[in-house]
Image (cartoon, rainbow, N blue to C red; front, side):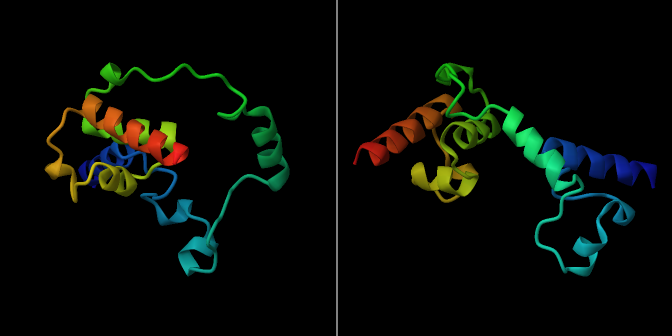
Length: 125
């Protein structure tokens, strides 16, 4: 059982899915288990509001442009496209004109540059 839990934990950690999935049913809010809630948070609304006010947004924070050469893997490229352009992995694949991740023939840095250029063109046009 410990081995199974370790494998599940590794998958959740690697995919950064711990906010979406859980290993233990007792950790899930009852509304989710019964299918009655669409969005369930554990923090009271007052705490969330304070956290969002204090947290700087992309619009107010000057972030230097990302160096495409720093992107070494396809997963880093997907994360960079999400962080920088708000694109999901599916939208990123569409921007690259491929159907699956295995169809990508370019280096991850070149993929990022291609997506960046398409996003820039879409905003200008």
